[in-house]
Image: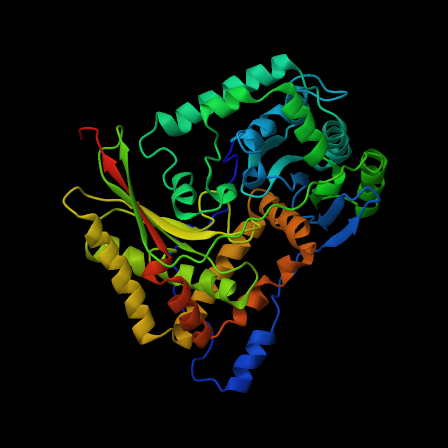
Amino acid sequence: MGLGGFFALNSCSQKTTSGVAGDTNAPQSTQATEVAKVATYQVPVEYYTLDNGLKVVLSPDKTAPVATIAAYYNIGFRIEPRNRTGFAHLFEHMMFQGSNNLGKMEFIQVVQKNGGILNGSTRFDFTNYFEIVPAHKLETMLWAEADRMRGLNITQENLTNQQGVVKNEVKVNVLNQPYGGFPWLDMPQYANKNWHNAHNFYGDLKDLDAANLEDVQSFFKTFYAPNNAALVVVGDFNPAEAKTWIKKYFENIPKSTLPPKVDLTEPRQEKEQRFSKDDKLATKPALAFAYHMPDKNTPEYYAMGLLDQILLQGNDSRLYQALVQERGYTGSVSGGINSGLGNMFNYNGPMLWDGSLVYDKTVSADSVVAVLDREIQKLDKEGVSQELLDLAIVKMRSDLYDQVSQLYGFGKADLLATFALFENDPKRINQLETEFRKVTPELMQKTLREYLRPTNRTILTINPLAKS
């Protein structure tokens, strides 16, 4: 368990894609027909809501005799209380400390002794818990998830214990690691202005120490309620049976009174920002760049997803070719949309497109930034041809299917849960490819000029203090 948890699902796969989809010389009517086509593979989706507000998504898949159960709560570290940084992540740990009918760590034992795996994680806009078990254990896991949604064993002993665990996690993963938290934890704090998007999500140690039982009880009562959650079942199961069990175990859990939505908006950035951070454990300099994204689900949002494929994803990407292959500044460059903490689909607020690299000491940060500018300007000057756009769609489609099939269907469950939570429409999973195919070369260039301008950018460099 932890802030990053078991999965990433981020857009930073290092795959090389060759070939071009479509005919760049096809008449517009033919291209329009191609755009109108839907994906040949459709994810089965049954969606409904219980009387207490719990959103339920069922997606049968007989590929393997396993079932994936995912419980997602609409509470991430963006909206955790002020002066309680890291509280959403701390609470994730509390969910494994016992419930009404399962003692401390017994939830984990129920899964593992039945041959399953489980984990949880905290992200920008949700906290999630999932189990992958043999299909015949589905009812057991639905009962167990309902049991801890109904009530936790919140004690001072459990709280003190988990405060220590989380503080140790911060020390191991961030404070005592070279490049710890770079750039996934650091960059939002530098690039954003709204506190909700810009505070230390892992938690300041003093804030973690300040959490008390009243905080925990109030947080659980408010946010860990059925009307603030989505339950997804994917795999080899009978939908009618699953619906009976879900109604039996979840329907009588009381709903909560949810607080007003938090204002997460970010002001338009009009000037480039540059920051530097000393790292006593790093032996080489590092650099990260970030640009504010278009609003989610707009045409420009889908265009940015395809620009990401062209510029950053895979060994055929413009930045990999320019920084690694041509100049040898670094051995790799990574990043993407919501990189390090998810993918371009599973968030609900302002977001960054970012990239990062560790580079040789003989190279200046300005040289790296100059390459970034050169590649973006080159793409702007030449324009995005239909051929290049088609290739980006092929790469995006490949990434989408990678995500959907990841970890016995957990990747599918992740998208279904977040689309249910944030858009109230898990069937969006079957519309994504169509949305990307609507993007035109003209929209790509318009999006590049507005969102990849230097004045929309934040640069963060790491100054290495350790001897190599």
